Amino acid sequence: MKKAESMNNHPSKSQQIRQAARHAFPHTIPIFAGFWFLGITYGIYMNVSGFSFLYPLFMSLTIFGGSLEFVAVEMLLSAFAPVQTLVMALMIQARHLFYGIAMLDRFKGLGCKKIYLIFGMCDESFSINCSARVPEGTDRGWFMFFVTLYNQIYWVTGAVLGGLLGSLISFDTEGLDFVMTAMFVVIFLEQWLKEKSHYTAVAGIAVSVVCLLLFGPDSFMIPTMTGILCLLTIFRNPIEKAGDMA
Image (cartoon, rainbow, N blue to C red; front, side, top):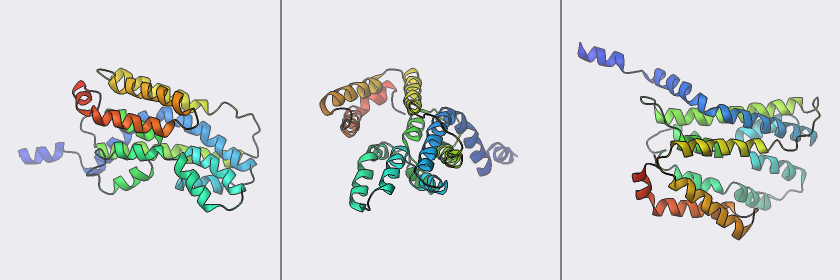
């Protein structure tokens, strides 16, 4: 009898998946606003550059890197240069190397879901999956999967919509990229409020400022990520004791 009750109380796999999908969605709502604005802008940009909506559709599905996709438009319009394109892509997306290292522990034991989580990792998914507190009883792997999936859906649908409507809509898109900056500020503030102490936030700000002064605005990202990773690795134990790292 007790065994039967235990089985009834334990959610099935399908229930766990639906629960994770439901709990992940609210965390991605701010991303939806930013991704749709920029995705539509990207689709319009592709349209006015002479490409059909199929290009932003398949590029957002396969590349899924906002900055790189914008740069890829110029690459497609330029002379064929595969080596230069490869180097440029690696430089633009190099920060994801550090994201991947930081997520090694979180992705352990997730099975096939890990493949999509690695492919679909972007700045916003990384931020949510690192900072969000998964509700008790919710499968963390499926939670992270749906965060990543929702974010890609937002970007793909925005890009396709922009590609379809690009020929019908004409407006100045200057300044829309600030939406992403505002979104990261909100995520940072949310993480700040959740921390018991603020070692990780202060370390991130300090390293960013120092690298910005040393390397300039065009080259500070990789040194910043390297510096933050080194600091968090060296001081991991005291930071975990302070409750700043999940």
